[in-house]
Length: 336
Image (cartoon, rainbow, N blue to C red; front, side, top):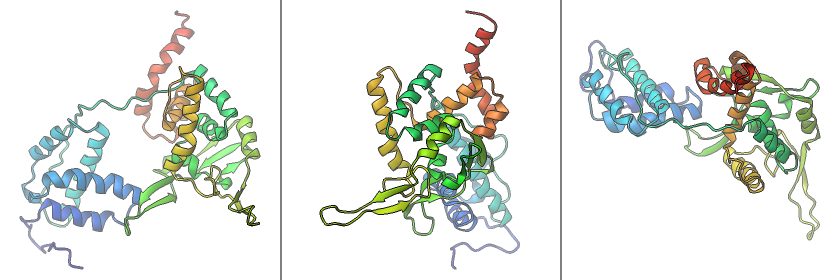
């Protein structure tokens, strides 16, 4: 295959442009080597949407740390810190592999590069205990309330909820095993969008979560078959479909996250707010943070919360949830 880049045998090439090498790097080092969602979100988008437009016409050897720092100063005005971190990791990997191939001398993404964002981080909102009780009470009377009850009790993500198969639930011992998530992503070979239920973000997301007898009983009662199609006027009987997934689409198949949000979660949260106008309309992901917050207020240590939620960053957990303990501390110290 003619890649357009000739790698020298013994000496550094001074004329390899950043854009040429980055596209080659994506093709050789990332495409097919990582999961499709990681390829697009972690590598392709940062490289093509941010890095190439800025550094593209520069030669690899001409890019210095000062250029890198100036880039992040500009990007920090409009991008969140987490996005800057993705760009930095991607940029560093591009130069590391360029060095391995004798295309440049040094990696300009040095440890002195500082990341600072002017964009305020997205604030996570949660329900307090009383609000949580209202949500649960409402969910018991709602058609798809079991979806919401499961999210609210276990702190699993929407992707993990839709990735649950019947084989992942032990209703004898009341345990949910989180083994995969369902996502919608582009195929790196065809570019077509597809629904994929395969694996998790990282090894820490695979976990076992005990559930209450109450939730287990509701899951036992959930139908595992669904009738699809049919036409009574024409005498055509519907087909009985045996479901593979616990939370399935109207046809008994895997639910795409967007369709689930539009058909299940959004109608639920809208109906909840209509009946209880003072109840905030949280996103599905914020139910995950609600559960973590309530666990913390109930006295669970951060290590246990990290395991149950599949989190790896205890520092992040402490920063996000420690503030909610002030009320608990005041109660324990008998301060008003």
